[in-house]
Amino acid sequence: MIHRIVLSCACALLPAVAGAQTRYLEVYNDAPSSLVTLAVAPAGTEAFHDVAIGDRPLIGGGNAVTVALDGKEGCRRDLRATFADGRTLVQRNFDVCRYRSYRTGRVLPPR
Image (tube, rainbow, N blue to C red):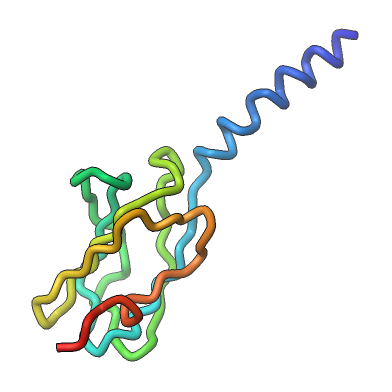
């Protein structure tokens, strides 16, 4: 009986623990310009913070990098990509739990 109670309590905590896990997002820069910075915020906020993309810009044309995102901020995020040519792209309400990759060139308008 005690084992069932302990198991029930442990199972009840699983969704909270699973929701806070680190999320990994593969960022493909298929835009023509190099990606200089990537910033992430909880969806609907302006609380952006930079995410490490390496020690140099991510060259355009299909290069990729995997970034780690803190799971405490939930699944929906706003992504802000800044490119070497001065353009900034903001992708609102991106679901990092459902989608494992993000492609900059598919949403960046041509110049």
